[in-house]
Image 1 (spheres, rainbow, N blue to C red):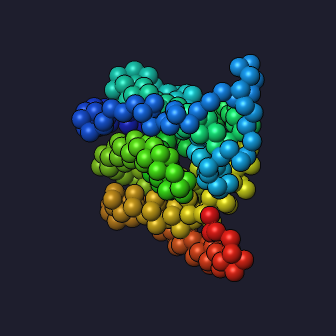
Image 2: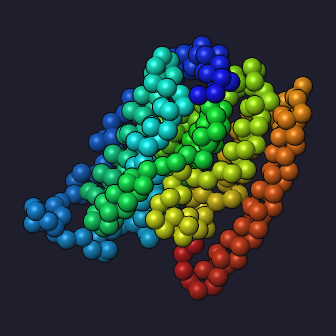
Image 3: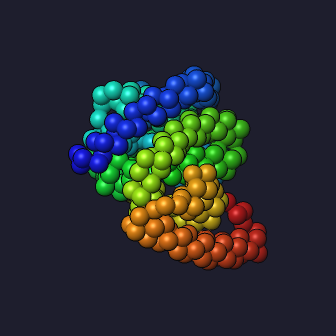
Length: 314
């Protein structure tokens, strides 16, 4: 670990302790099994001799199934996420206490989503398990391994992005049971985002230049943590058009709220490196807006074609 990272871990210990206390006072206990429609379930084909899965058994649209599977496989990589954060934050003291708590809470998400999908017979269970094996066997190499600050920026953006993706997936499903479950999972993601975002507020007070540089680097190179999922590019395009997560949502509902809340673009008294990163970040936001506008135009044309042919937009 670099000397500056070790110094920052020590300097932020009191802030981590305060954030853990705030989180535990805010977080509400919930039980994954309470959100699963067990009465829809029955045995699948296999060793128990149940009914083989077939597509007509699913109540969900194709895009809803795609979005739920992508969200689930993203959550499935939790062991790798824990490992990569443990290498940066360590497992001792307040940082370790938070990492273990965060991991325990995140673990509920894949439990609930998978149980919902299987009891509802929404997806092919064999294909789902093979995808999980492929995804988890590859592990996850974070795009934000350069420093503690890079990791915290990535986690802040990623947690908010995941919250929105989960919430929109629930709405898209057209099933009140799924919507309720995904909304509950999204609450966890929001609390996790607040934890990391508040720590970044503290880091701006003690290491403003490095924090702004980390924001610039992560925002410019950000990719969703599920980008290694087989077929992710095609699935993400479908999810973008369906309004689950797309360039406009990324810029307006994820990146900009984080930057505004922390005042990253308004931090004064920066050194040359921080000031350059701040200017570069501003330019990149303009590029994100242009890309989002192009996407908006493509999406509008796509929806118009769907209407003309009498097909649903999602």
